[in-house]
Image (tube, rainbow, N blue to C red; front, side, top):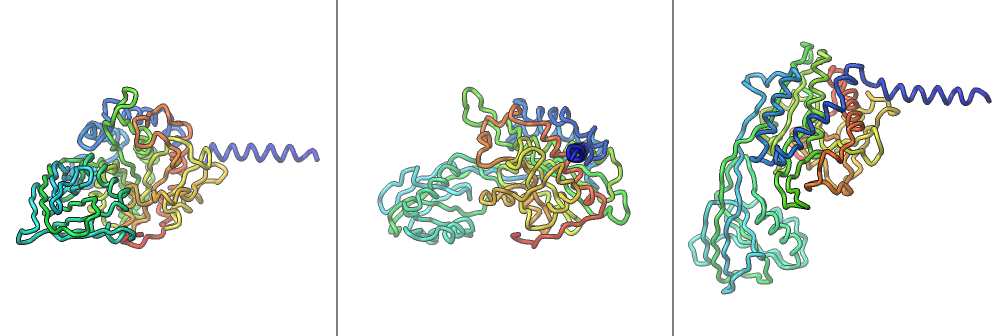
Length: 441
């Protein structure tokens, strides 16, 4: 009976040691709370103006280029710097005037999807727009596909039964710029909220502004050291952009994005320093800070087009790790856990007593499809996002309250250490996750 306390003490001590030593000593020294706090503090500082596309993102990119250089990374082969520059097209609906069957349509009951710079339609013109009617009592999905996959001028009459969907379009398209990697299509789509099911007569005119915007991902490389694996890549990534300037709340109008995703970007910088220090990666390691995630994932999409997908063994995207997960401290979840065995590999390399990689607890949020990992997953790459955010209870999400004061840097450090330990067999070439089905995994 006297052995029981002694056995319990051994178990407790062993558990504590597992927590402390599941990473090599170099990681415990290189991945420090102080360093994580410094990078997050810079990226989430007011000087970065919320890191929105075109406003503050250039400052953030330049800062990260210096961080990658100090971490000992190299530019991509053939690149002169860490900046991977590309062009997106920013378009915005500017004006729309509509008369339908002799009655003017209020601005709040009309939406213009950005397209050609200007247009004017009438029912009597030689080639009038195609008419699409969305009646009451029908499933929306087929009509939504028709709207967003249109290949010609399209006039859409939407019954008020679908006003919730329609009002979301009003809020989005009249208030926000749209982005694309190619110029907008040379046609326009106009939606009207109306009980009319016919367009006997109509007059529609509108205008869209379009301008090219130069953006940049920040990409660095540690070349593989094993000839048998150096042509294989493991990607560590996060997005550094955020929402920029928002409507002021108690005098604060800067959406600093400390958790979303300065936390993940700081993790990528820390991992770069860690692996450079180890100097033993068999596979080539690619570290990416993406831009334009918040406006459609265009940084990841452009990056994905430069890849040879079969050469990429895995992508570990890191998104919002600044607060504890719903599973408690020293845990994180992996989006799309069931789609490959990457999550199982991560857990296998980390004692469960030290850290837990769990399946995504928010399947109804479709997080696998909402972050930069999905652009690479569509190519068949086992690409997943690691996160700790608690949704929908994270009230700071996409607000001006996403400040550094909300972050738990001790737990964040544990998450980064666990990612480094979990990825050990990926980096060494000993493990290769199962691939995804290309297309829409």
